[in-house]
Image 1 (cartoon, helix red, strand yellow):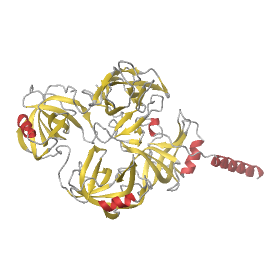
Image 2 (spheres, one colour):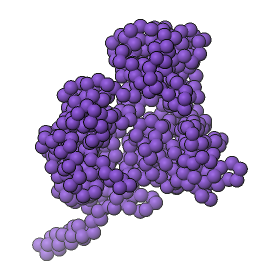
Image 3 (cartoon, one colour):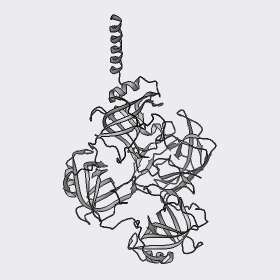
Image 4 (tube, helix red, strand yellow):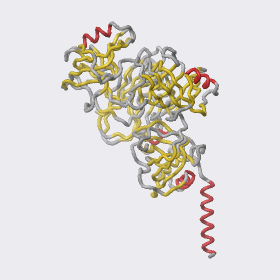
Length: 575
């Protein structure tokens, strides 16, 4: 009996010792561990041993560094912070045993349940998988986690804007007053529904979201902002003139002393489709007035600079040049090309980010096509480009060209398959104002000071890479593993002063967190009068874990000066 009691007492003391040294991990950066391509804890539909978040931390701490449990566990708790955007139907979040419990246990690239578009703070969940004790090789910080967990939603309590429930109804002007009363950077505790008209659309669609300004009247100007609002089902993009109601919590965003009243990630209901799409013709599946390329140019020339036709046209011709590779930035495969009335007719009319038809992997030179949309007279530096943006395309004849890469296109790289391992190449998603999603390595490859810039080539943001001074600085991706083959890494760069500087791309292999020999491409001169394409071709002879990078080289008399540079629209293509 004494022996039994002593054994029980010893077990109790051990348990108390574990509970007294539970170490809730400090914040760490999501990209430190690579992308959501598997590995770590395994996804399972089976129920595991039920534990709380605190118990899961104790069990994880008892593992060896980097080890994964052999037992499957089911952890129940509340989502306290969502990290980054949804990628490949997965998203990362922190959870705790209470709604205000902070960052206790991490669900790393957890699988979204059917019918759920994103995880939200305040939701009660249970996650299932094997525990992993992740240790950051640079900082030594321990993160208790399940990777690729199966998730069941127990209670959806919202808690971060974008709720599907109706809020307190207010006008745009009232929403501004309510926001002004908040402290700088604060978010309201009350959910509101703001009704008004879209007066300006900002940037393109990204991950089924788009930003716009709204007012109480169609000509009311920029009164209240819907920042990365969720597109309703069946709506491909927001357009100027739409009457909408948006629901979420008000935020008083302040930068450089300027206040922006906004709702972030709002749920949107379209009340009236007012048309008036800005920034080029909208995609449409309907036939327009049939015209040749030459006739489309004449009609476009008659427009005022920057204007878009009210009428929809269908332009028929041959593709004479393909610009860049296929981009899925908006969720729909798109690619730009020039066309003419004959196969050797040159660059007459542009299809800018045209939608690639189903079953077609890319546009190629020589194809006979008809494109449908509204004509736009795009003018930059006095040069007029007649175009249709986001055109619907029908292939009439498959050409035997080859899809050569043009030098004036809107996407980097030449022909090939876009590699999805390069995350956030458009720099539209940011973990913070100094860290773009997917662009921070766990190794020493990242050494530049970064910041979010609104001087973007496309979309709303670009990445500003700080002045290098006397040491080369690198904007590096998170680690990725690529198969053997030939690749092209491309990005657009721009200097921030009138002085010409340089940039070059490259990569560095990474083994067990340690970098190998840096590989560089050729220097490319860049200036501040326009965006310059920087491309780097490289060959991998075996499967390799690496970081890609865009460099801002140090001061070099006669070649470059030390200054901030801007980088946008990066792509990785496998040839």
